Amino acid sequence: MNHLLFIKNSVRQKDAISGVVTGLGVLAVETAYLVFAIILGINLFKRGTYYQILKRTGEGDKTSSQAANVLGTLIYAVLVFILLPVVKAISTKIFGS
Image 1: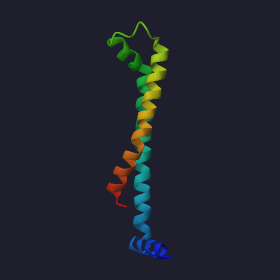
Image 2: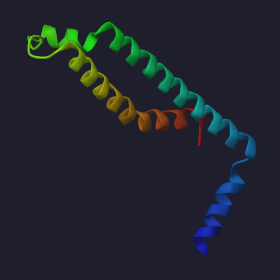
Image 3: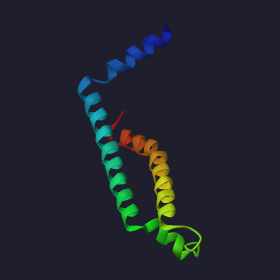
Image 4: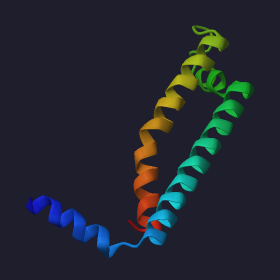
């Protein structure tokens, strides 16, 4: 019962307009981050950047370019999704919560 009182008080302190603005701001930042990350990932894949990195380290003759690009894209996607909560926390701090 006591827990419900705290929730009710915290809701009263925040009006509906600021809640919507906060939610839309966070959503806009997350969407921009994901779109930018996807476009950058596609660009890196198309240019064969991951294979070029392996080639410069001397491992290029041991790995095919297609395998290096697919593996690099998977690693890039994991990093993007790992950083998503960080982006969400930062955007929440910017737009207020």
